[in-house]
Image (tube, rainbow, N blue to C red; front, side, top):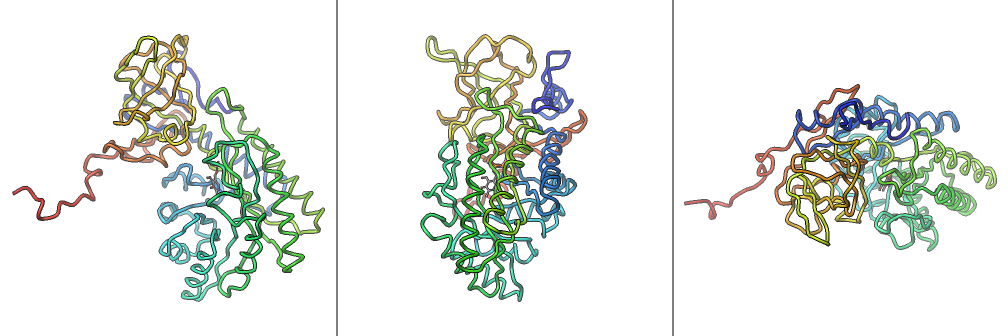
Length: 443
Ligand SMILES: Cc1ncc(COP(=O)(O)O)c(C=O)c1O
């Protein structure tokens, strides 16, 4: 299976995902609709899990970065595939626990965890918290003391690696809201600080250098910098790094400007990391750390598509043609946020020649509400079903109710059959928490 086999064009000329005809999906579930291919998700989880075990033994764990797509079903799949997860909020933690995900295999991130989120994490006996600030170390220590426990933590360190990706998704340069910088000495100070606390157990370090990264070398440099730092901490503080979490960030295919990597191809990224960890640990005389990685986008991104129905078409002579769909930035805010590029396909005429250059607009009252700009399509008509590919990561999880649009439902396709994993929102859902103060009630 290569990365695109999850998508096929059938004999009717319709796009299929995971063996389900997208036109039939649109009929059965309506649009807009997120559809995920379960086989692809499991395949990706297995590639990472098996590569780690084969090349590094049982001395590590793959964590699915659930910020990429969080709902109960995805935590069930991760659990069945024997991997861990990371969460970045009380809400993600709650969802994982509601799905019956084992707390000891959950890692909690975030640059500003709230007191109650830390409390909830300790109450469920979470595996590990990744501390990102001095105040968080204090809070975890205090909450652990209240409960009479010692909480395992990692420190998020910032190795100062420039990864080739969009600035907003770069997280390990010195100017970042995330992590203690190695370069300016705060990572060492934070280590000393964490070691001084009685109710936390500092187990090692975490870094995440950014997202949508294709250059293996960026990850290798991050490993080297982290282990150089670990060696210094051993020498200066006699602190042994038991665990090293190297984050996620592996790039996926959105358009033909991106590299196309088959699921098996991602093993190479992990192999490069593992080789770097082994070589550097040996060079520095460090014991091999328990190794964690946290891929999100690469597990669910290419597994998902969004289906829309084409509505209004606005041709502005000599300027542009806008093809408007029944979704928009409320189900995919990524173009509006950082001009992310996507590939659209007319799902009901998937083998037709692409003869036009158009921009796909959403239905929100916002000029910047675009899904894709200057992309090729066959001549679109109202009523066509438009699929946008590679929307499995950071689409549903970033969706919102702007203009009081309903967040689309999600279906999971297994062997050609689709079922809801997130049900459609209703207008009642949208007004559920609204309150009209008595003085404003209609007399
Ligand atoms: C700490 C951390 N780990 C893992 C990830 C997952 O990254 P990706 O989805 O690019 O694999 C992120 C993404 O922002 C992150 O911040």
